[in-house]
Image (cartoon, rainbow, N blue to C red; front, side, top):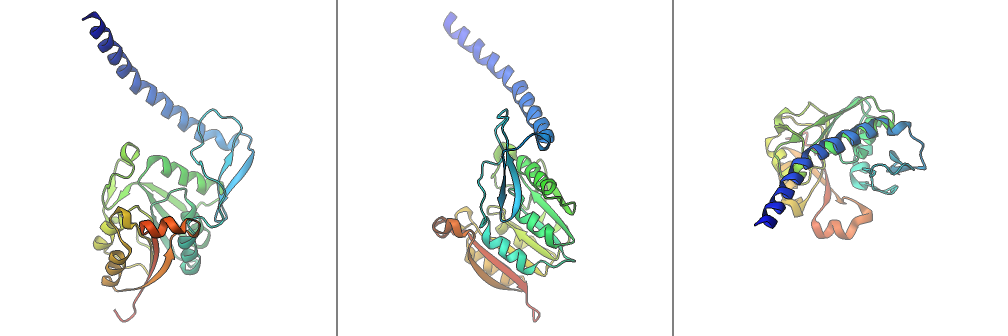
Length: 249
């Protein structure tokens, strides 16, 4: 009986300590992210020509960007943005990730609004904008359309309806299956809609193409989302579609 009591007491003590520990660690990580740009660096890391981070020698906290330089990162989305975004465009990006596609768009457009459903990745997109000197990129920490449970405990605290996203000329979506929820509720008609599909997450390419055509768009299939991950993209049905408005619709 004494042994069981001791084990219960130990579990209770661990439980009481866990939350304060997590709060302290989160605050320390936020503080580190705020000053890390002042620390010395080893080398830069770029993806699709966008600076996404610097390897640092301190080792105090794990780098949130465990990724190597990749010229062909998000190759299809980047190619579509470079082709279709104009200097006076307003661009909305749903699903920021490392902030690469949002930064690519911001280099060409008048203004970019990026919605990111992960608190950690929202900070990363903000840092990417800072690293690349982009003051026309606004990050909104919010889930768009529906909470599909992609980020579990790290998710943003609010959800924005598809009809409430900022007005835009170009809409880019890389939102892990939420495209199937957002498109049927989209009330505005951007000039161009660029979508990375996720068949393995319930948003198959054919179904997304059908939704876009139903909204009056002409759809172009750009093929696999990432050429460096071609086999995986084909297996999981992760493709890129570009939809442009049909003038006759």
